Image (cartoon, rainbow, N blue to C red; front, top):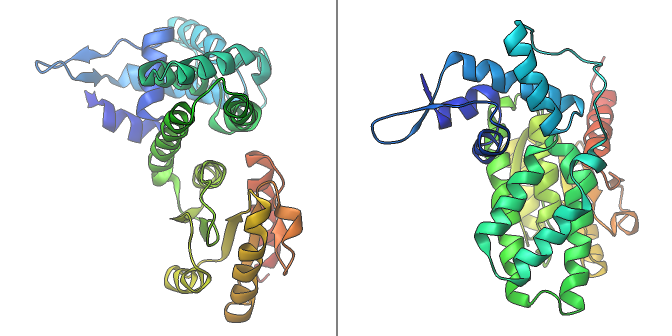
Length: 301
């Protein structure tokens, strides 16, 4: 039998997603220890592996749970690449959840915010949820704050809840990291971390070793960190116009001190940075693929 923490490590599924799949879809029914802790069997791990593979292929969580139960009852195996999803993630993670998230923030209800996030991230693969739901949801949340539907306190509550969720996903993906080191963070003065943290999760899930350096990092510290970790690449988030000049300074100092390191930029103002940086676009999946192909092309034959 396995504890929930060990089950998460073995399956690569976050703790919150494990709980959500159990509560909402009944894909597993773990036993309980005398202390009421969840205990997962080998059959539970097999069920979770099948469901995770289906969700990774693009199935909605509800469809994946039903298919997992059917496969287990018929002795079926884990799916392979190329299975067609039953529906697009746009249908799996709907606009209704954005409205629920706004309502929960307006009510300053952290438990409800957590439930909505559990629901969203349990419905599809992490990258799909971030690209197709979370990032658009953040725009709606910003608009809701601007027009007074959410107070500053509500916006902070939401941001903190999302940051905690992304940080948990980042830690859960740590066991996959074997590839080149990539340092990620924000330039001096920049503090909007959600986008760059989500991208860091995507990189870890793709097998990259990452050094997440966080917000508001001075240019000199970027150079020192890259040297200390022997990073092959840097990813800077440039979400605001005010972040462009500090990001350009970081890029120029890195280009002088470490010309072998590729500097990528993401965020709303990535095209304005220049200084030899490579824009990543606005999707986690596509950005990870671009970074990987760029680094691969630079490796000696």
